Length: 194
Image (cartoon, rainbow, N blue to C red; front, top):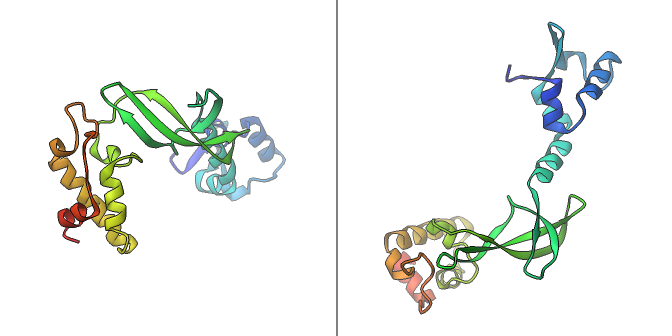
C-alpha cells in the first residue's frame, strides 16, 4: 500500500481536507482516473502523483510543522524553523546552547536572523566545530582559502577527525573550547599537511 494513500493520509501529507479529495473524485476533477483506485468502500490516491501535484503545499506544511515560537536574545517572541538553526555558541559547563536561525513571519521566511538560547549540551565534536567563535574554524578558513570546494570538505572532515582524536588539546573537561586555545592557519596547514 506504499504506492497508494487513503484520503486521510493524503490530508495529513498535504493539509488538504480528506472530504475535498473525496469531492474531487466524485466530481471527476483534479485527480486523474489512473491516479485513484477504489478498494472496498475506500478511495486511494497515487502517492507519487500527489507528492508531485501538491509539492508546494507539502513543503509549506513541513516548514510550518518545524516552526517554533522562541524568545530571542533581545527579548522578542519570534518564530524560527528548528531544522534550519545553526549552533552559534555553547557552554556545556553552564548547560546552554545558543542558536542562530532565520526569523519566520506568517509562515514565510524573512531575510532576518536572530539568536536564542536553550538548555542543553553539545556532545559531538562535529557540532562543536560548527560554532562561530572557535579558533580551529577561523584557522581553517584562512588555511583552506586556496582549496576548491571538494578539497575543502575533505580537509574539514580531516580536521574534525584530528580534533576527535585529540580532544584534550582543544576542549576542557566539560567539552567547552579551551579559553586560551590558539590555533593558527599555520597549525591547521601542518595538521592537515596542506
